[in-house]
Length: 385
Image (tube, rainbow, N blue to C red):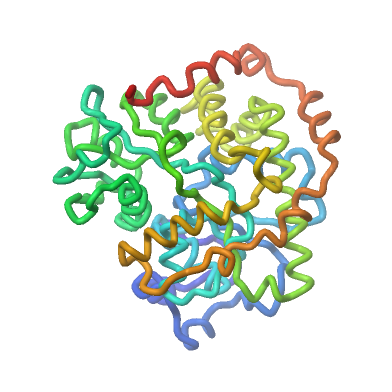
């Protein structure tokens, strides 16, 4: 388990309380050194994965490299590998922003965490199901009576809604927690019938020699994907709200930069994490980021800008989770998802960002990568109808 490495970090006892119940008592809160009242002396974002050594967060690393977060004291933390930790830590003031899946966000709401989604990264459903070659299906009802492998048991809250909207009786599906990062190798070794995956990771699995075929949420699912959440109270504080707008503007600029020059965004991540660079290489890295750009951008012609919520998609998600019993009270999407910060987050000079991207000098390795060829073959692993 990876602990948050920052001053006044949460104690092991408090973390166990949070992990066990999803809530904390006033006694637990009093043990936390980093008081919410102190404001954003350092703004901490926490990962849902237990690691930062992935390409998923490329907008931050590209934005940081290009100076889009200048003037802000920001921190990125991997967090524990517990699938629900990123909402728990935000709730108790141990981090300021988390990046949960919709299922984990619904877990937070069910446990009375006063959180709100303020920047929807995953405009398309990033999640997919991997099958051993020759065993895949686009008819997910065939998974009834079968076993799906997960890296964390908490991920069932991701898969159940995804299956339910496809007409699957999820009570007839078995889940096995095969561990992070070993659940994919377990599938390859013949365990289970399918495994949860997501865009970007799909390309990384190829780099590791894990060859699967996929049912892709980006092609078939109407549901949303991961989003940035903060404490609801922070949106009611004018100073914190203004800070959040500036912080999200850095992410939006990083997203725009990556869209304009995906190879440069990969380079920024690889500079931060040399081991990841050696494991993936420029081509797989570029493939991974293109998959994620497709998810993060969505249909921009129908969006208010980077990070805007499609309330109908979110409402469909909350409706299906209510039917599944993941939440016990109806949730109105507009009450827990906010587009109030989107205009400010997207209020930047797009021409300047494009000029930054166009003027970026790629290394020879990256300059030789054919982006258009990768785009043409990006969905070759999808199960053919």
